[in-house]
Length: 218
Length: 211
Image (cartoon, rainbow over all chains, first blue to last red; front, side):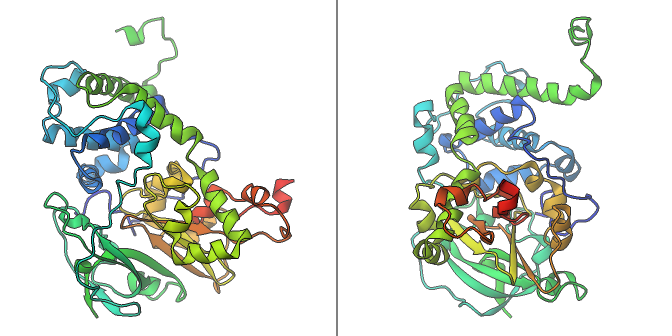
């Protein structure tokens, strides 16, 4: 979707400010949100792309002004509300009013290290068929503005690029919520001039990792 | 209201946003614990793990090994996932890895314009700037300008390649090995490798910077 999260190429935000030694969080609540969101993964109620979509669906003005972990908070609350894990009244004051729904499991402290190292987030699936494109093939990305989740950002739509790597057979995020629908994944290189115009340095490039439905033979 | 009582003379209005989030997040955690979805001790353990055990020291080890072991370096280029996993760095957000090598001809930079994808397994949690709109918006359209923000001015003749992390593949930049480091041990070399040098917004430290 063309939401507040699809930032590539927007202008006017000012310089990037690196604060040395700032640490992982600005307040304790941020660390609790990070830990809770990771821990909630064990409940098995959503995948990473549904989680991303919950965040990118926040109205753009809010998305751009919220602190980072407030975006996470809003996103995870939305996912839990949609699944009936919690109610809006419960979120308003933290008081339990309805029973828990059945979930896959709960991450316990003693299993955190193993849980983080389970490789359960791997996106590769058993290969079906052969990749339709080879390294060196010229492609053109599709022109499309889906209402739902997509990993093809606005700035790289309807652009010509070259396949630089075949990365395997991966879950296709654009169909998340409707099954995994895995497809071949490629690294595709675009020149800065193709993406942004002739005033860019002719040597400069951007690569994106894109799935077969994102492009056609050029 | 109690927040404005004499007991809290330093509570100014600009803190209200943060204290509101603090209260909301406390309520959320207690609710989720009561419902049995999470365990607070597990949340503590996750936070601690990313404070002390999973961070840029992991990536620095990968880079130092690549600098000192040509066979590992070759493996890293051919199959970064297997090479990095062989060092034990198999945690989440590192399931599929790609290593890109900076040289005199090409400078690599990593971003996620759509969210904040980052190689947690080797670099830990991303710094604020990496997740911020200024970086995510600008590094793809004006990477040389972003590098200037980090005090780096690259000649026009050096190609800049930006990698937008649009899939579950995660990128680590292998910075150029500083001059005069022949014969240094892997541990000594790792101390020269900064987080930013593995994102592409910095260089490895020179020997001068470490003494």
